Amino acid sequence: MCLDPNASIIIITGLSGAGKSHALKTLEDLGYFCVDNLPPSLIPKFMELCSHAVEPREKIALVVDIRGGEFFQDLANAMTDIESSGINPLILFLEADDDTLIRRYKLTRRRHPLSPRGGIFEGIKDERIRLQAIRDRATTIVDTSELTPAGLRKELLEIISRHAKIKKLIITLITFGFKHGLPKDADLVFDVRFLPNPHYVPELQPLTGLDAQVSKFVLEPAVTRKFLRHLVKFMDFLLPNFIEEGKTHLTIAIGCTGGQHRSVAIAENMKSYFESKEHMVVIEHRDIQRGESGGPAQ
Image 1 (cartoon, rainbow, N blue to C red):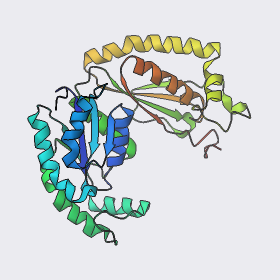
Image 2: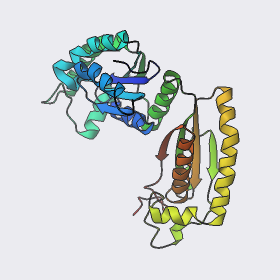
Image 3: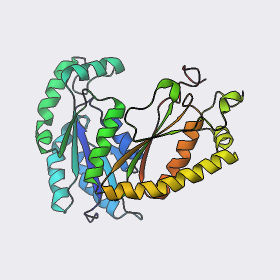
Image 4: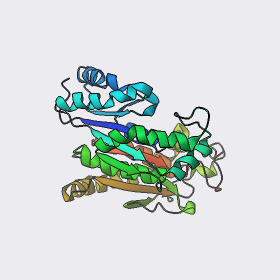
């Protein structure tokens, strides 16, 4: 195995229902090569294949959990093999209290992997016992009991920024509708309600800023192009100063009236700009399905 010692390798494990799938999606959005439910005995071989790829992977995330059955017992040996090669993976262990896990299982109507015939509590209890050894070895433990999906994502971004030795920023772009309230965790907020509004064009009204027709309608007018030039110039000044100051994670909120059209189109455009500057970007369209009327977008 000859992966770059500076490569960012993250092993996600923990209790079923604690948020591992959401964590993996967040890492995928950040450009990590993600694999779910890989048998631990195959991890060293997988790392070796990644190192010999035409384009070697420098950011890898794996979910390993109790679904692997008897193979899960090989995880400790796999971690030893990886660490002996000079690579120190981040072992991220997600957990939650029993009441939260039971509530999540009931909401999704899923069966616990250790309780195929029901008995969620017994399955959780058994899983805690089986996972204790890897929990003791974890780099970071995150209790997701009180975390919303957005809260978990923010926690993960802070953890990743410390682990990956990122020289650029991790940027979260949130689009929203002012009529639904401002995002509480935004560092910067931009109001784009002055741009042409597709809501008043009948054929565009049911679409979103992710659709090409809406994107063209929002981005092509001279006022939008002028706004984006000013915004890019502002960011070119601002971001290097944030980095120099030691900031690793920046949350930018872009709002229009309903959060369905203009904010989404502008955020997608800015995502491409930030990625061209080699920043890591996660985008969340908070109100895209709520529309101008406050209900689901049709």
